[in-house]
Image 1 (spheres, rainbow, N blue to C red):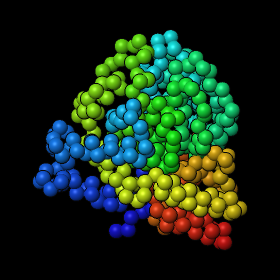
Image 2 (cartoon, rainbow, N blue to C red):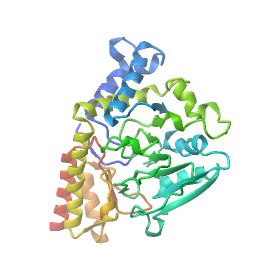
Image 3 (spheres, protein in one colour):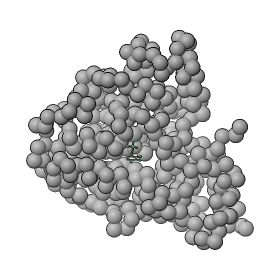
Length: 355
Ligand SMILES: *Cc1c(COP(=O)(O)O)cnc(C)c1O
């Protein structure tokens, strides 16, 4: 069996060796003759997994003391709700940057808790750019942004300098590039884009921003609960955390964030260069805001679509269709994607041009 070239936006590609190890652990974990998914989450073997996963997150992102690392459930979508619930004071205010579908959903949830100001908004051009030079009022409880817009293929390259508390949805580009953790007070990311399988959400939160809302927060939705219980208040999603841990280990072994950022730049440049060179194609995102993870482009000559799709399918490329709100194509080239798969796609684009 030859594996397909998986350009899926999420759940998405994971390293081959991680899949191999994960499948082994399902049958016989750590040679204890039990499956990873049938042992107690309080057993020594699983507690070590949780410890290692947190240690790797801390190491790879160079997270200083004062921040807690949590593995929760509910996806990034539950964080849209938990962030305002835990950070917005009663009768408080929050500022949001509206850069796409996921930002919009986050804004919708914040509005349930209080005044939600949109300080920058790129909906006027179908979210093809990142708003800049916006002002964040000083009296808001926090500012929220989405670092990479998975659907529209834009990415924040420079985060605002602000004295406000900053919360960021990094679901689709966490661990893909160096970030200055000191610029953020809360980061969250659903695992299934760049870290592991669906089922767990990584949350990195600065401890001293919590317990300031005056709100009576339900136990499971209170970050403090999970901090106090080391992400083990209830049964954690053991499989998703284990596979995330393996992926982070893989990332560390290949040279960590510095190396992966280099690879990701190289991969993205290769595809963007072809999109810009080849007259048949056109990128949809503003050039300076282009994402290195999700590359959106159009095939300008609609008559060639059938042929292009056929060529893609025949070469074993999977998941290249664009999101319905942008159309065209979207190549999601997360950390685990090999440059060979992108070279293959570029070759097909060239071939289409020659025909
Ligand atoms: C996929 C995605 C989400 C939604 O994540 P779930 O874990 O499915 O809730 C949120 N934000 C961004 C940026 C995403 O890419």
